[in-house]
Length: 199
Image (cartoon, rainbow, N blue to C red; front, side, top):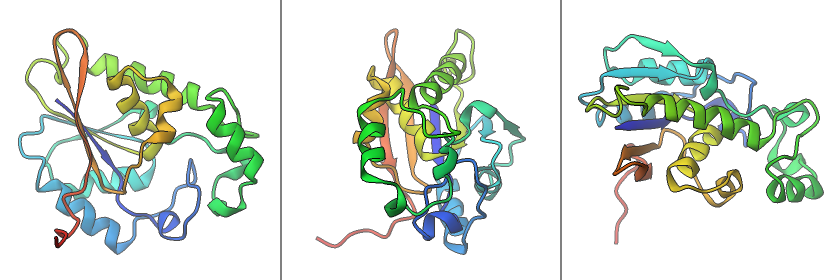
């Protein structure tokens, strides 16, 4: 089983910023979210993280007791000149191009197709014959919104443009298993830290 955890809330998330390679620290809420997620990860056999500190700090707060491996392929997409800007500051025509074309490159940044390719490579490696996630082990990867959406699209056999149709909360849990010859999305955007809703 591959369990993908989005990092807890960071100061950039709380401020409504487009947060790519800029490294904003976790908020107190983000650390509390991570501790809550750790409670549902019993039995994990391997822990991997993006190199960014908001992901590594989340991985540490999970309390799995596992050694932490860093894999650059799980880093957030590079938003280039839009990194760290308020979402409302991105021009409407830029959002339209971004959503319409997975090969759109923001100035100085990375395309969704490039991010998707590196994430698919990481997923396929984890599920390769003899890999821990395929032979009964449970691999936890702490990453970011775009890579986790890319992994979900990979599991569903969708193109990179499918990411725009997915919503992913901070400190959410996504589970991908292996079916008969193909990945299977078993859960998406679970939030164990969220208070139960009243009917």
